[in-house]
Image (cartoon, rainbow, N blue to C red):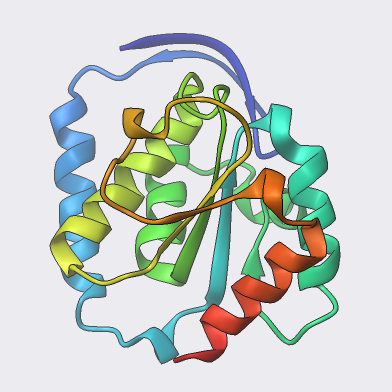
Length: 177
């Protein structure tokens, strides 16, 4: 798989080739297996936010309310220095598979088209399949077909809730543990 200039998490990537995508899958699988030994209480983050850059404005409104709580969260712009210089496949897989109790996926038409959200989704989905735990929280942002990524998990229709209401529901879910 080839890619050109991609901006992700505030880091510019200017080309490269993934020669063997099965290696990435093996890395994700190994990460998930090692994460099975960790309980949700051992996680660095309560939630990780996965979204396409086109949806950043809405995600930041939700994040505004999350920041008012005690929730620990992963948001790319708050971690630019940590992300900078890392292999993004490994870094993002580690964050979403090992370090987060829950991952909130803000799904939109843009989400299914982006290379890096697909890397994130690959790790999230693999974790979901191997751990068989309910730690994927989907928020639908538009009329895009959510069955493109999943047709078996319940989701919130983000158009029916305010950013504050979504943040409150995320907090309620995290507090159930």
